[in-house]
Image (cartoon, rainbow, N blue to C red; front, side, top):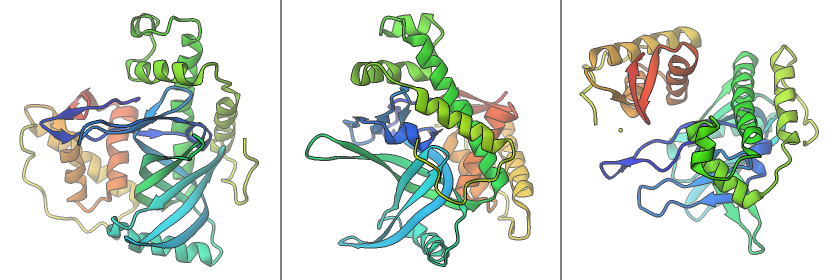
Length: 317
């Protein structure tokens, strides 16, 4: 989804986490700054994706602790098939620091491993007008190659969707009506119009190459060990069940239990249920937030058992 500023009842509604290769994000130079207290900010890519939150993955490439006036923080890089994602763990997110220390210790021992990260897109503008992008981590964890290949496949699909829309829009007048009539996905239209005005003609070959690399890796090639060349008002949810000890449960079994819980919540509700309620239902079972986000994505995009009737609100399909 492309996503746009959405608010309800004076509070911020979560933005969708876009899957994106580093080459697309790092080449972005168009920020949209939210004007109100609860208005989200975005970075618009050359393909027209309006990204506020991201789900990225890759091999840990660097990690360091940084002492600031606000306290300790962390900075690192993830390498995917197209380049590097820069990320940081902020001093004001102490709940992430223990995990960041564990990642740092493994990196300093010489370990190189795969990570999945959920975070907010950020940008920094230099005095000469340059724009650099990075990610402020909200959650992260180490993953195996199977999970990484799943991320590669879905990110390739998302990128190809934007590439296809970009191709179809090249000959259109840059207006919402023309884009809509041509079948451009509604969630991409605003970002694509903004991108076209800001970037002009765009060479998409680097994004196509990233997709090809991802597909090649996802078909069975192992993830890279060394650097590769740069190229929400609803009915109350039912009473929460007791917390389940998932320490001895496999990741897939835990997700299956979380899926069943989400379906139970939706099946018991008479109106659409907001995203945060579904996330809490999973977390209250002992499922991590990052895994809970994946569960909801799978139920909507893969299993096709739930539908997002309006942005951030879900029903059974």
